[in-house]
Image (cartoon, rainbow over all chains, first blue to last red; front, side, top):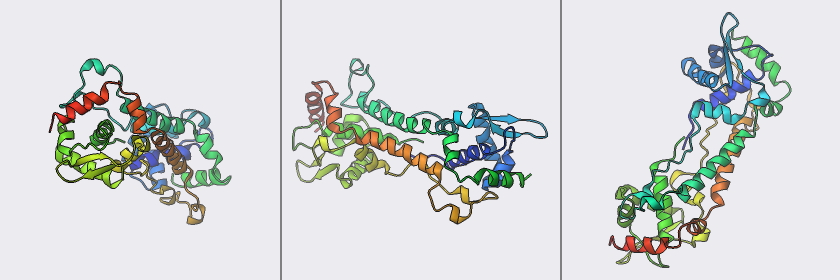
Length: 157
Length: 157
């Protein structure tokens, strides 16, 4: 059960964008160089964040990505699920209905209790990430972080 | 982020073993036929449960697997982690320390706040599964389930 490396990329890129001046953007190429990750693949992930309403893609000479909403309105769950999907890591394939022990369909109208407990665990994971916004993350960074981030990202133009 | 199909197998097999008479066992071959899953691969998973102290493997003419502890002392977390490991699905590769935005090592003595929040979510998932025992699962099955399970599994001898 592993999340891809790109999960770390998008969490950090969103945190970086949250530190820019209001209205400022950063391109996929800038963010890729900022974190030394592959630009084409990162661009795909950033587009997924746009589709999820987390980022906005601005075109034109000052084009690039910025947050689509206030940092206090973007949760880690929204970022993670934008690129990794929202489905539970546990997939119930209904093995209770197969083999010599197969239960008849009329005994399987309710969700399997094991699947239910695994779904509850996934809900607890989601709830934990839904309780953390980008604003919460920024609040835990050193006070000098935004100025440093802006300076470093703009040096990449 | 997916758990393998075998996660469902071991959860169901442990639930089945929890319904046998005290001291009774079922073999990997029986359990494989009971759920119509591949016996050699299931046997490997059951051995992992033995190594984790969830199941006991009995040798001899009445050999096979049984619970190593009371059903009330075995949690879903122990079963899942016996076969899938206990590591978080999120892997922090410290991208904050690479690229043009790289933070110096002295600013990275504390865990990355994003990794910390992802770890908290994993802890919430683990805590949810640690709160459910096999006895809790049995309590939610129909009262007729154990007798049916025993009869079906012993018919496979």
